[in-house]
Image (cartoon, rainbow, N blue to C red; front, side, top):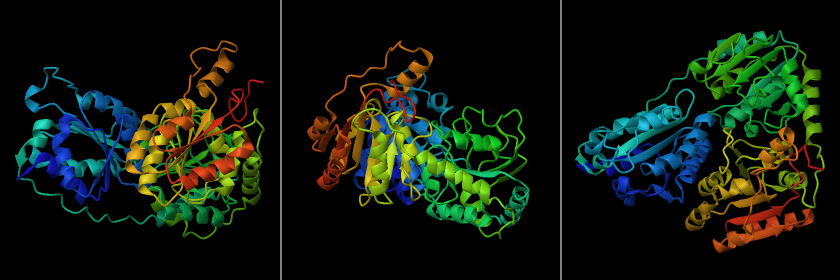
Length: 541
């Protein structure tokens, strides 16, 4: 006989979970008791949103569900921000939420919420466990659902009396051996159709990727002579130095790459949903009809035909399809000029466009791109500051980028903590705006407690820069609701036992970064930038 909390923790251990993220609550005390004697590390966070984002980042890093525990009511609502990131980013994640005792349901008891209704549009599956003996069944299913098809978040509610009650429960059986289908025939058919195109473009993104898949993509593109564009914040899926790499389809997209999507007569889309951002608000391709040969490879059958009507489609994970495509002989088509032009457009886009002020982000990011180790992990949240990172940093290896395709502010710092805990031997750099960082900087206490040492570069322009940019476009001269009163970020880092510096000139950045790295502690480098620099291509001057 074991109490429900112990049963649950032991199933997580059987599933290979090494770390969970939590904000403790009385609703899941039995789980905390189960973790007491477990080898699973419990990273105690300061806000449920931060805990959920750390779990989501863990899911991105490993391809296995990141796990978070939060309490009922306010804890669950706070955590929903991270659930939304996991949903839009197709990241496997399991959120466990404490719940009121079963006997008090439907009385609007203290912090009672109907989680099936609350999380229905955000999660792949939401359930409440009513029987401690069935905890292994629910946990096993949660992990399978989180990883199947298009991965995403699962939410399991845990009534406190179920967790504290004793039960006999059979532990999870080992995961099934999955037999991979033979994709050689679909791969050959895809290349036969692609070979008839004059201006083909490969677009990659989505879940399930690996170092091997990234290597296969590069070899496939090189063998067939194809240009490759990557989806929004999926820049680490291909070494950006590869001659077939054509750039990323992001918010501030290279106009020449956007035009290349319009001009392409065939698109091979592997893993990506080809969403709003990649298509610039569905303007580069019209969902109602287009003149392109669209070939769509996706792991979830429900995604194929959901927005786009492809000419060819197959249900397969991106790595499996690339493994088949890379074995094909060259198709014989001559796309050398088209591909070389795509690469030239990308190289031209890398040329820095000068922005106002003594601290120029284009130079800072250029220095980082040239000097960081190839396996350094870079994280960011949302804001115009990220545009400089996306434009000027060249990602060299798989899983060196953690960023929310959902556009969630505050994500970069929790993600950096998660990455630094998972990979203490690698440099982890978080780029954050002053508004973005302040949404989750309370996790400075978490990072100090658990001994991680990411380096945070805070771009301080004293405003919500993205919204100010839109104001200038739509309501010029009428500034409203975008100014920020900021702390001394460097002093704040020191208050948490970290290393802090302020940089007000480009020349001071490199030595400041090296001092931060040598400190061995969490570090914050505050860049005081000119507020006139709104984006990589727009200024107030």
